[in-house]
Image 1 (cartoon, rainbow, N blue to C red):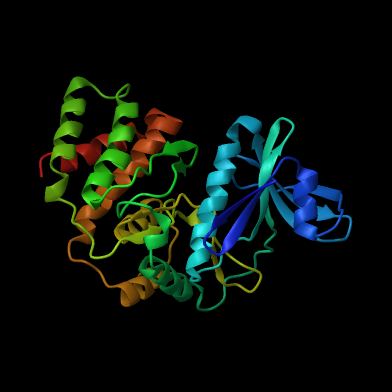
Image 2: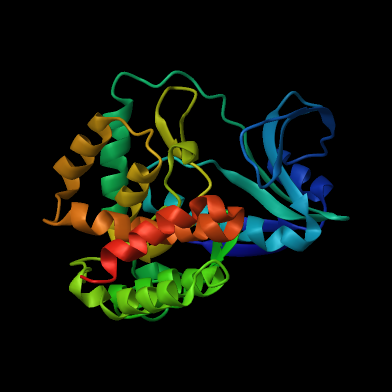
Length: 307
């Protein structure tokens, strides 16, 4: 077993699922029932009922993808460390034979409470306002390790400037992967966009811990109807990038935005920057899922390359 301390939660990495179950229960336990849980497309997921009646949540993938679960566990622990919004408790991650796994508490989701959206907005604002100095040994933006955005690698090399970080760790890697879809004119336009980022973005007054992949599939209401965040792709960045992604695919109530901006404030010009932040996610989708996203990426590059 290996233990990595990430702020308030020590993350346990086990060499077998048996060891992970023992760590979760504090005693020998076996799996009595294993029920598939649907909703994600990157991993297999199961609700486990153990021999003592306890229920846990298990995600599995191939052994070669064990780093994916390590990154998810570290991201969840980072959010938990802020004490601002609930995330699932991580019992252990590890490998077992040809599998990698992540073992977590099982959440029986309930109908959202009457103030669910307001609480989610305020909680995210509080998370964005939390101290970030413990997450980086140098620089102001990035994270202690690279992680994943969906199934794609996410580069988190620390930088002292948000504009530099967004350029070199977000847009450039995705644009380079996407060149197989671009003609020579689009490659030139992407280069002009990169060269002009300082005319569009700004340096935040305060860096923020971001969820990083905040679409409607990555929050839920817990057993009391209170908000929870799941499946993060965390890094230290500009808080606007998280808010922008909530608008990319929809699914967030207006009350969420009213409550968030009531607590955090809004920097003038956010609407002009929003689609630039989301160009990162659209290009990642292009690289992961193919040409269905190409027209959206081209529109984004065309919009910003001449500013």
